[in-house]
Image (cartoon, rainbow, N blue to C red; front, top):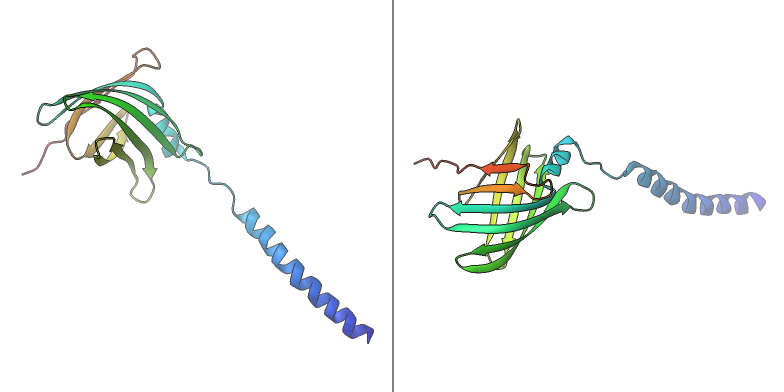
Length: 159
């Protein structure tokens, strides 16, 4: 009779210990992901920027952007106060790196209801962005006293 009781106790302990051991092993395997060098390049955008932009129809816009790392340092979040002929507005932008397409992405929303998406790449020391609508812009870094300027070329349209 002692063998039957010992066998039941062993099954009960295994029924408790095996799931716990599986959870511990699973938790050890799930380590927090770390940003790679592509993500670290987004550091360029962290800071305060004065932006002067012009769209393809000649409408000029000015903005003050404040950009900071999002938790985890995989994305940069930018908040903008924008002045345009349509009035003052606010915008929010998320800059990220998409490993699947090997490209940087920018998603922008504004308090006038607009949204925009662009893809970008870093070639040497030049950031190139393509999106709609095409826009020319110069970003002046206010964090380091205007030493960084970021011209955004207008992409040519193919016909």
